[in-house]
Every structure is written in C-alpha cells, then in structure tokens.
Length: 424
Ligand SMILES: [Zn+2]
Image (cartoon, rainbow, N blue to C red; front, side):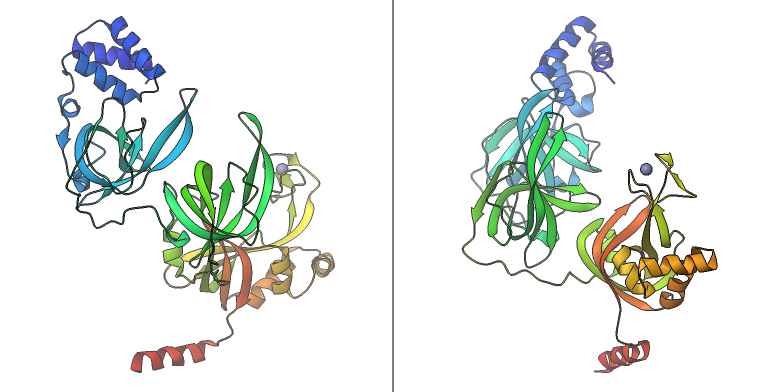
C-alpha cells in the first residue's frame, strides 16, 4: 500500500476528507513516524474511531502480545538498550533497540525517539505499536507512546544488561556486550550507497566460540591478539552465520585480563547445529553416506568462480573454465544430515594425490568421473570428524570444511566404549 491507499482507507473509515488525511499522513511521515503510528495518531485526531481493536491500547503481559495486536500498554524491565543509526524515508536517524521483559517473557523493541531509559529501569509504556519482526511480535515506541518510570522494580527472570557469550549470540540481537580476543583483523574498502567506505573486519573469539566481526567505524586499535570489551554491538546474519557488528555507537575498551580462546570448535550433534540456523566454527562427527555429483575434478568460471555445468556458467555462459577439485559429501550422525564441502587441499588429501595426478588419471581413463569414483571408494561408509563454517538456507545445510579427517576409533571400539559407559 502506498500513502494514497492508506489515506483512502483512513478517510473512508473516519468519514473525513481524503486530501486532509493525506496531507497529515505525509507530514507525519516526513518526521519519520512509522506508517502504522501515523495512521494511529490521525485516528485519534478524528476521535479515535475506525478500527476499534487497535485504537484503544490494552494492558498486556509480554507473553500474551501477538502480532495481531495493534497497540498495547506494558509494564516491563529494560534488559538492553542499543543505539544504531539507520536510513529511514531517506533520512539518517538514530534509533534505540533492545529487549524488554516482565515475569511472563521478553520482547524486542525499537524506539524511534530517545525516551532516556537505561538497562535495569522499570517502566510502563503506553500505546506501544506492535509489528512483526522476523516472525515475532516487536514493540515500536514512537511519538504517540508514553513512558512512565515505575518505582517498584518489575520482576523478571531475564538478566538485565547485554553481557553475552559469543556462543549465545543470534542474528537480530542488539545492544549486546562481549569480551573477546581479536584473532584476525583487516581493513577493507567497500563500495556502498555513499561511495567508498573503509571498514574493519575479521574474527573474534572468547571462551565459548569464534565469530566474524565487522567494525563499520574501522577502529585501528582492533589489532590481532588484543583483547577488548565491546559494548552495544548488534548481530546480523552473513552467509548464514551470525556476525558481530560494531557501529559508531559501540564502545571498545581494552581488557586487562587475557581472554582464553578455545582452540577447538564446539562439538555438536548435526541436528542441533543445523537447527541453530548456521554457525561460524563448529565440529560434527558423522558417517559419510554419499559423495555427491559435482565432486572430484571440476571446472570453475574464471569470472565468478561458479562451478560450470557442461562447460557453461549460469551467469557467463560458455567460458574457458579453470580446473579445481572439491568434494561435496553427505554426513549423517543420526540426528540430521549436512553436506560437507571440501576445498582443493582437503580433496587432494582424501584422493591421495595432487590435482596433476587426478588430471593424469582422468586423461588416461578419458573420464573425469574416475577421480570422484576413487574418492567414493575411499570414504563412503566411514566416519569423519568435520570442522568448519555451517550455513543453512533454502538449499540445505552446508558445512564449509576447514578440517576433515577420519575418526581414528574403529566402530567396534566405539561400541565397546559406549557399552562400558552404559554399564558403569
Ligand atoms: Zn561466471
């Protein structure tokens, strides 16, 4: 719906002149008021008529708020407050966002104005708009919302403040604090809407996990090996894994303590890892069921790196491909399946020869498939430990392997160990 449609709808439900409604609507939107709130205040101006359900906000427990609600009143504890600058209706605007909670649950919010509240504050928020965000209800606090401080603290089981282990960060988290060591860090220039921008990106780690990060402020002090406390970071998904983002509002303080970094990736069941929606560095163990087509000797498009199908790139058509090797292998541990994707180095190891050896074998047999078949013979039915970056999308779960090796314990020994565990 565009503004005209909204004005039309409002004018007919309120029984007033459309031109007047439209001009009010345009005016409110020019002040960056979200459309739902703009409509709400116009309804109020004309006596609050119209769709009754959303016109009178009702007091609700957090757990009872649904995306069907129009506006609600809640009494809550502020868990986190993050700041971010966004572009809304063509304007740069600072918003606050985070989580609120009461005894029944917690909920995300976005505040379009600075109401001045901080983590730990207990508040009654009147006339908060409810919108759907990533499938969940979220509260929108704008011009027409009221915020009153409660003197009695609101009881909640959730922890106040945004301190979080990297392992527990999820896409959509905001106003979080982490204590990390920088493992990799590099300044990069990217071209965006406002021309070239310098950013810093790399990998951070704590005791629980490691994650990629991007510092949109390109702080030079984020050097490899140094440990910091980051406050007010937000999390976005990038290629299926959560990424720590530092904005201009994030603060970075050097830590006097060292952050112990676990050299091992967390070991998870396949089902659990896939269920998390993607992980940057994870380890699974599973039986190799199948080496998929498109494994062994392959050709890539020299322009975009895509694997060619019958000499054709999906984007660039008929091209002179670059030779490469890879393996796409399906692993299963009983809880789920994942496709492990191995690069050339790992594939050469599995094959037991270099790419030059593989080319020779293919030439001799006059068939590239002999390479994939040789790999199949070596791996199918065996158990492997895979470490890598897991991404999950509509096409399935892919584990981009950084380590891939056969588990050294043989099945019989494993069964015995399991048995002794059970009987012990
Ligand atoms: Zn291409």
